[in-house]
Length: 29
Image (tube, rainbow, N blue to C red):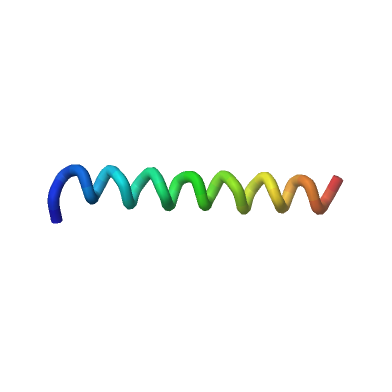
């Protein structure tokens, strides 16, 4: 894999993780 593709995948997984965490917090409040 190229360096750029690896960075891109990392950014996507991080943003997905953050969104799911935000949704969980929003549901519990």
